[in-house]
Image (cartoon, rainbow, N blue to C red; front, side):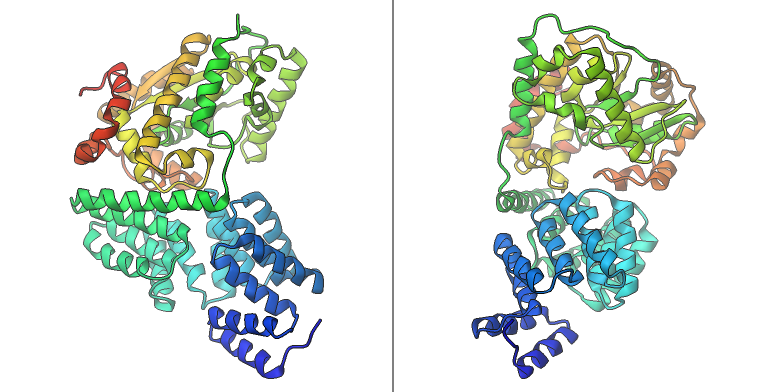
Amino acid sequence: MSSLEPVTLQAIEQALVERDIARAADLAEQALANGARDPMLLNLVAWKLEEAGEYDASRQLLDEALSLSPGDPSIIGAIGAVLRKQGKLGDALRTLDEAIKLDPTAAAPWLERGMALETGGSLEPAMASYRRAAELDPQSASAFGGVAAVASRRGDFDVALQFAERALLLDPLDPQGAAGMARIDIERGRADSALPILDAALASNLSDANRSNLAGIRGDALDRLGRYAEAFDAYAESKRVSARRFEQLGVDGETQRELADRIASEFTSIDNWPGDVTSAASDPAFIIGFPRSGTTLVENMLASIPGVVALEERPTLAASEQYLGEGGLARFASASASELEELRQAYWQVVRAAGVDPDGKLFVDKDPLKGLMLPLIARLFPAARIIVMRRDPRDVVLSCFRSNFALTAAALEFTDLERTAHHYDAVMRTQEAFLAALPLARHELRYEALVADFETETRQLCDFLGVEWSEDMRDFAQTARRRGVSTMSATQVTKKLYDGSKQWRRYEERLRPILPILDPWVKSFGYSA
């Protein structure tokens, strides 16, 4: 290891004390160019490359640094940060947990862990990690901002305000603090106050993740102010940046829209799809439909009933998803009883690993896109009850376009308005074909009807599920706050019943190019033109 000049080391350490990481990285880069080789220098220059989106080059320097200083928690934590930005959230969390185990008092891995968890939609654990980072480093604007951002998404506005004020005091341009404060202003009827906060943060040097998030919130503020043309442009900017994030991650392979079309074609080519193999009264209920169709609302209504437990958007069918690969449905159709039982047990293992005990209860599996898995569900759980959420397709597609989702295969489809509409069309064609062909009990629940006549609709739903209707269903907002909600519906579902119908009318002119794509479903589902 080549030595580092004392004067350079002193300058770097001073920059770090002043929290000027960029200056420290520049000094480190010059030192490396002059022949020095030191783990700290490599870590700092790796950070600079990471900030520029050069993740592979950053990782090379970090691997070299780790070879010079094995087991160094700061380097391991930095590797976790790169993995997070590459979208490898599982690997990132495992790496960050390793760094925390080596040094539980270091704030940086806790902060990165919070970011990784929030990106993946695990809001409660993210909040805990951000809080721990803030305790360990009271000068970290990012840690306080992280708490504020998550709390504002969950509707905990008093907590969000406390932490957002602290974050912005430490750094007036902190993107998470700005996001939290802006959401507070919007929800409390002060959207005009949110705009200066958002505009200042957006004018600063931001990661694409933060820029996409803040641009979307800016769209929400403009929407509340009735400035719909500007709001649409803000949402479009958010989606443009999200699309760039996918490009940087190098996402390739079959899109979810292509998956929907392929499995529909494969399913229709199979003669005599097998009927019941094993049927159990304990088979789950599934809530399907499409993102932003009201599935989270219904899940929390049902979870409010004694004797009902629910889980939101977890890969409960992960062990069976292999059969969604090319040619897989034909293999699944001929799976033996023992193979199916093994897959059922794998399903319930995932449920229990998520902290849900389904024994003796009705288990509700909420995942709007599991409609694409109905052939798997029909063979594994022939007695499953399927709740199909309906909402005006124009409102659904607009809402998906307006929402800033975590980076997933589905979210890639929502990075462009026309692409979102085509994805909706593909999923509906496939889902409806499965529902028509498979002998599954189903109940259609219209979002607009639920909002208009809560008791009638929920009583009919309970009759279908075979559970007793309860007044507790009206307390869905309290249930959502207690359980924690990770989806984009978190803010709405933690408040009173929310009527989101006919929002598309505000944006009708901008939606005009996609209306012909959605029109068949508007008519099929009985919505007026």
